[in-house]
Length: 630
Image 1 (cartoon, rainbow, N blue to C red):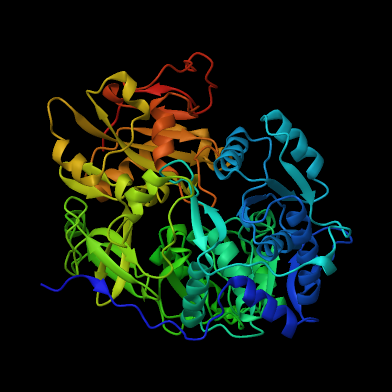
Image 2 (cartoon, rainbow, N blue to C red; image 1 turned 90 degrees about the vertical axis):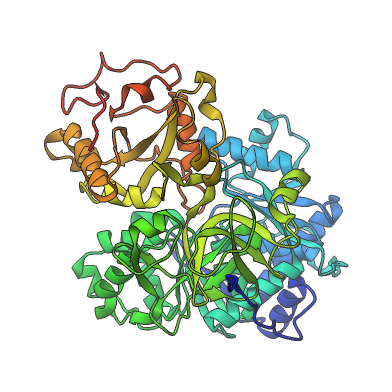
């Protein structure tokens, strides 16, 4: 039997010792060339913000001098910036000081995000917080409110920071940490991934070989700077090759998706990637009139990753935007995660993506076979690592064509989780192999990612993937927001206190599904746009979703919870946090617009206010309808 694994390619020789060395070389050679351009939101008098390599170097030296003066050498430093060039200067300033950058989202008044950033601050033990002048007073007040008033704050957009002339190069080794990438917590609490200079250089080299990047290349994007694809792929890779990075804010893209595509044409961007939902948003929001003004002929590498890659999105996007000069082979589906720095596998940008139609029943039993029922997009071959598929129950390597957990080994696999030896041993302790927690299958050297191990829904001995169920339901009615649903399983017959218990692995769930009187129940929490609901009839929307799931998967879909937009929790990279949504559902803390639940499932819910009496009359939102199966 042939083991499903991929041999890595040989890394390029003669690479610099640290990423700091790379930046210094680029700033010396390309001093007056633009390194970054930031496009502000449309508005009267708004102009692009430029930062040259020399300007970046000067600002970074000043920040590094301040960090040295305040004892931050070798210590984590939290970076809380709005989108713009100030973040880049702060990140490079940490490199120049020998500090450990910790990119994180700028705290807002949203309780969930505030708690997350406070957790990152405490977990990392950051000695300083860097931001911009507009936010430093607010951050100082926030730090005082969370009992951390002694953490120093610095506005990195000031001109009088430190003394650039007093800067001296840090004594940084390849094994030292370059930064901490906090995981976005799709299935667990965020953890700080320790990315060394060796890891970063290895992955940037792999990205360069995969995407064919070169000096002077223009890279563009809108992903947050604390997102691994946004940071490593769009910002740091441009520095690595000596190119130009053109950026806009995530909000700017979400408000007007056309601006992303206009940026590609205006700046002749060659490389720009995003999660699948972004391409789908362009499909739905870019008008024919706007399309007629686009020029996408420069775009030659469009990575699609960070969430399940939908074959229909790839096909529809190429068909829709080919009149603007988009080539069919531009899409490059890829797979990666923070624990491997970024890239693991990637499809060849010079050829069309692999689309495979497979037997749905066989896939549910863990076998990739030619047939009908499911369409999978390949995520390409390994770039600087080995990829192995193993049995989740035994850790034994599996043959090609069999679904199992994806394991990765290579120079991009990071050093573990900061200050968390237990989690490091659990995920990184398999003889150099990283246990990714993702499910996939290898076929002819190409990886097909099928889902998350802890999110697999086991019903009647079948392994169902939540994103497939969500897709089927969302296709049932135009009011159901695509990519904004969470499908999961709950088990009746448990004690009421099990609401926040972790989801079992697919193996343990499969072995216990019929134990005693317990039974698995499928639940879908789905966002709905009320303005798009025909006649305000939410019952009809829920029934349509149930019917679509039952028709496609032949399983009961008796539990559908319709919620307002923004309810479904996501990670910073846009992945649905299904485990979190399961806990919120079982705790009874969701506020439904309309729900239909089986009695056994309703009995599992935590105490929640009964909204039936105050439900609006149109469409009977919040009505407690009896369970319905399809």
